Amino acid sequence: MQKRTRITATCAALLCFIFALGSVAGPGGYSPDADLDGINDNDDNCLGVVNSSQRDDDEDGYGNLCDADHDQNCVVGGSDVSLTFAALGTGAPWAPKNSGAFDVDENGTVGGSDVSSTFGDLGGAPGPSARACADCTAAPGSGVCP
Image (cartoon, rainbow, N blue to C red; front, side, top):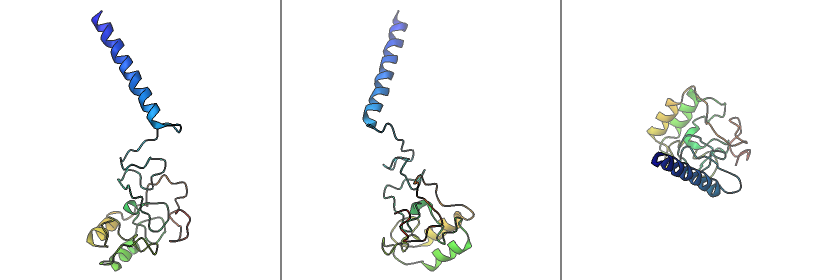
């Protein structure tokens, strides 16, 4: 009899937990945040990377932290490394748009770690992003994916 009571209590507790999750999620239902950056996965511009600022200086829908494609050709290549290297030592302002895009690590300045990150992403594509407007060919400042 004790085993049956424990099983019943465990099931009841589990159901309470499930209903509690549903009530916290609100009317839209549960929306996961796999990278725990406070942005739900349906809106995150850099899935799998903690980027609560959602900073996207070139407005292509991919957050700076996962977008080393600075020439907007949808692949990180030698020209992207060269562009980042040329921006070494510059600040990383939000405006004008694309000025901060070379600051891949978002530490406020374009440095060796940004060149290294860009070099490490060679051959890859920007993202992934959950933003429906994400377009790796969007011209910086075009407003395609603000």
